[in-house]
Amino acid sequence: MLHAQDWPELASRFYIYAPFGQDIAGYLCKAHVAAKALDREIVHSFDIRCGQDYLDRFRREAPGNAVLMWGRPAERLDLLRAAIEAPCHVAVKPPLLKNHAQMAILDELIEQAVLRELVLHDASNWRYDPALQLAAAIRKDGELLGPPQPPSPDLPTTTISHATTLADDADGLPCLASQGCDLVDLALWFLFSGWPSGPIVLHGARCGPQAEGTFSLADCTTRICVQTGAESETLVLSHLSSWATLEAGHGRDETGSIRPFVSLMPSQADDPADLLRSAERFCIERRYDFPGIAARLAEGRVEFVLPQDWTTDELHRRSSRLEEFVRLAMNPRHLAEDWSQRLRAKYEISSGLLRLACEPDARRVPAVG
Image (tube, rainbow, N blue to C red; front, side):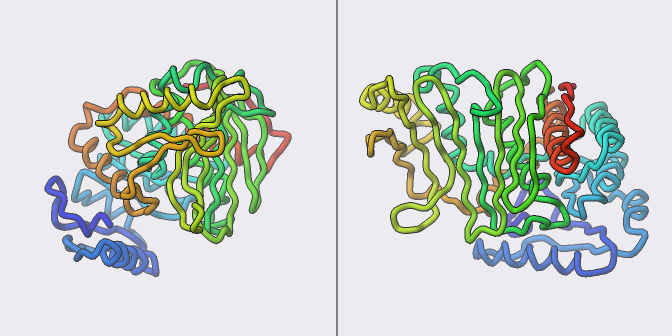
């Protein structure tokens, strides 16, 4: 998809460093498929430099200043180190952190990137979904939801459930680490505008086709759930507050199609009509941020009517993610100070939940850096 768009900020030639094998063909094939889906042509040329010494060759040559990092999860720490030492901005994919020593190595690499003013961009594609962006704006509106519910491992403040067509060990990484890492990123982005203080508490986790993990941070308890091998990709984010429960994501509509949705279910003590008036006020105030939205009552809940062009297409979210990476790489000094803290916390939570699922007796309470 990146290669099917004319980015004025990017050079026309891309350099690909990789070992001999199917990885190079797979990458070029994905670029072709993405371009075909967008009904566009590939606009970049490729300089392929492959061999068993591809990583050493990259270190010697470093032909650019930005790296899109792919690779097997166990190799990604080495790839990240090579990119930072180059030095290059990096669009990161989550590494597989098997122990605390590897987490310490990642901490060191993040610190080097901060000192060199390098962008480490590892944002979940979900945060670029318009329905979830609308849900995040609703959460920040104090007149719609009211105070959050008190945190409890048995009744999480926020639950994010993702059904994926991938297998449990897709890319050689258990879904609790791969897909779970994306859901942790989504939760941190959704819940916190700045960076909260306090420890991260891991409550429990389990792997498998129905994986889940629960953690707490700054009076918010979050549960992430991943179901693998599903027929289609769906996601539901549910957030409990005193006046209403917010639900948003992608689900099947009455025709069976996957569509984005956002809705509010009032608490038993609140009148749906009052909640509707607050939602209508929100739609008017945020009409420039979210043009075309409206609110209506349906079966005792408030539904937000979303524009028809709000898509569930993964290509749209990936494109928005790449646009942000390019923008940040062009202006690295604009990088928010808490970006590195979010990255640390995201990996600490996802890798900690994975260790907890594999070793139930290894329960621990890591601190936020």
